[in-house]
Image (cartoon, rainbow, N blue to C red; front, side):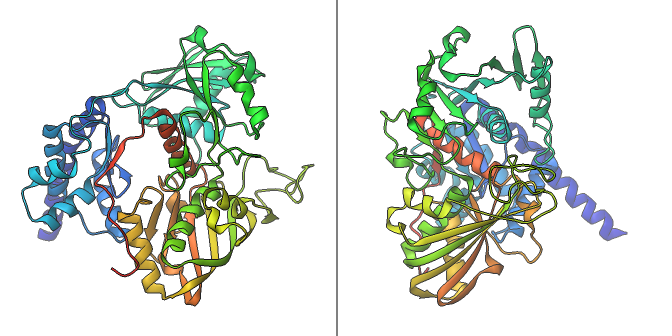
Length: 482
């Protein structure tokens, strides 16, 4: 009985500490556009138990256990320092301070110097053209990132009218999602003004069949970035129709672009985005999942050749039951069959990593799950690797490298696909599944092909808009041998 009381008292202390964190986390975001996380797991909007769960989760994923008192101390210090718009990993700040052995305030002032004194920037208007799986997740993420209002600002969605109560149905789909759960907040409808109101953000619903005919300025929208989620147009000629609309300035495609369009994988080649780029592609979910992993491995070991096999959840273009489909095999029931199909992801990697051109092949199997996919990378390396060495390198890359927003790492004999629903990372290495035999290796990379990809799209959007927050602490160089 004494043990039960002791455990309960311990839990109450933890709850009290987590409760004290909530106003600090929210205030930093509302007042300073600061987003806090623990090893990439966002703290913003979490309940008391949610904060406790994240602390436990990062420890289960192989990170050092984080004391709640340390998290609270850093958050309180951040409130006093009042940094500008930034993405701050509290767990890495705690670890860095422990290694420094000095005063917390002095350590934070030095480490967060790039964000201190930064002024909030002007918001940038965003329009979602299409409001399907990716469009609604982009809406959720952008709304969650609104903070103090200096970043991306979702102003409108453009769709084709589906029914008399179209706006009500679309608002309901934003509010409720069978895979990703309920929207974190409130969603209401202003039918008279044709607007969806989500967490105080008024989102204009515009009905149109032709992007060139929309006048965004009629709704107070100017110099907007149009995010095309429809996949209807993939080349510069088709996507340029968006630029004929009054109030539109740039276009981002959430699918692989054709022709000479730049295909951007954030963390890999987003530095090639120029002010004069009017139309860009955010590539595909699979390309975003595997390219950072391949870049890290090629940098450390060198890749001679490889084959990428993606075990991919079914998508909306497949049929629920057998019916006609213009694609081979895709006419068969998605929920009853594994379906061999094609993927252009292996070839698309070379658009972001030219050094791998001609070295990769790829294929795909669609399977009866609604979300989260798995890429199996069969690689031949220039330099030999052991399983432990390769895993340690990728684990450190997920924590300290320039790709830490893209790469995650997990070691657990119990994880399955649903454990990665809602992951903010582009891909997650399953360390226990790694196979290494001298220069031949096999890596298993999980990825939320909906939410993880949408996070990558938003990162590209932020670069285009010039609103991507500084990510701190700054990365450390990750070497092959620690």
